[in-house]
Figure 1 (cartoon, one colour):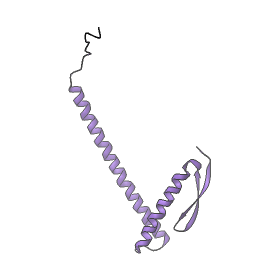
Figure 2: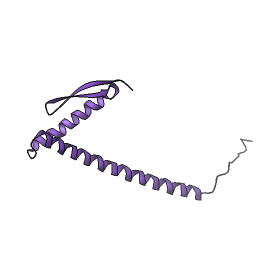
Figure 3: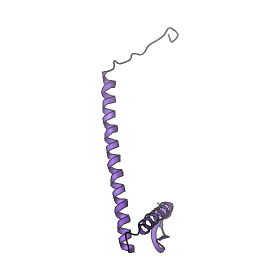
Figure 4: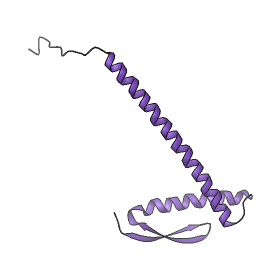
Length: 106
């Protein structure tokens, strides 16, 4: 892992310095741009005022989205497990195939 360095990110025209390993710099900058866009959307709606409230609303929206994705991921894993169990049961019911030796193999 790389040694941490300081990365400057700008969110709603305010600059922040964040310690980050060099190999994670791109992801941090992408996350900052994503958060900046979400906070600008909330600000532009005109329903939420104040940087703190905008940040909290963005965090709640992102946390909600993350929980929905986690739940969907868990449901997908459960479906895959069920399909795997059915597939294994079906394969166990099939008679074992014997190796067939043809006249050319002998």
